Amino acid sequence: MGLFQQPAERLKLPTRSKPIILAAASPLGKAVEIFKNGGVVAYPTETFYGLGVDPFNEKAVKRLFSLKGREKGKPVSLIIKDRAMLDAVAEAVPPIAERLMKKYWPGPLTIIFKASRGLPSSVTGSTGTIGVRVSSGAAAKRLMNALSSPLTATSANPSGSPASASAGQVVDYFNGNIDLLIDGGTLQGSSGSTIVDVTGDEPRIVREGEVPSGEILRDVKD
Image 1 (cartoon, rainbow, N blue to C red):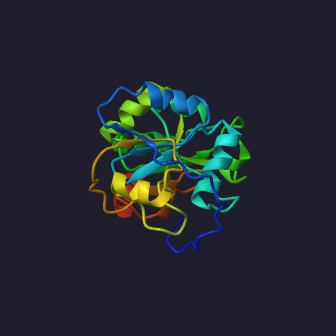
Image 2 (image 1 turned 120 degrees about the vertical axis):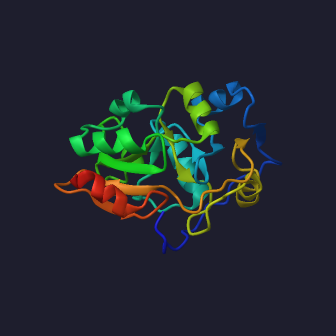
Image 3 (image 1 turned 90 degrees about the vertical axis):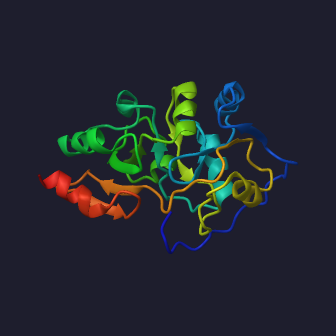
């Protein structure tokens, strides 16, 4: 989400009374069931709360865009379980990316790769690229272990609104239109993940975040 993006018009969605709410340490069988059936799961990361759907399920991705009021053509970043899962979503992993992953994953660094051809264009925004990270958040790690599948990592807020730092903010934003929320309490992230694009000849900082961009650029030049 761009810092100065204006909110798109959102669809009027049917309102539920409230989502299923799980404590961060609860069994995640229900979350897995909802994910596999195209539902929306809100979960805490090391920065803010995210909204997760199956990125290979186009109906689920369409629902996610409608829920956020997100403009079509804007790519959605992903969280993966580990380096081995990267091959499911990225076509190529350059040596610079390997260095960054070794130092900053798990953690708040999103790396943009050339996307696997298996990813729907709705996820990549027809850019041919995909942003990916491994989260260091305890609840997000538990969720990824349970799912064993890539998960969308778009922030849990309507497009153009501040990111959610608490479960209460997520509920207030979406008024029961998400299916399940993992309550990780109030998060301490001051900004989102830093985003770096490694698809060109030189790495390019797309967004400043938790990891200082100057540190990243020094690492790739050393």
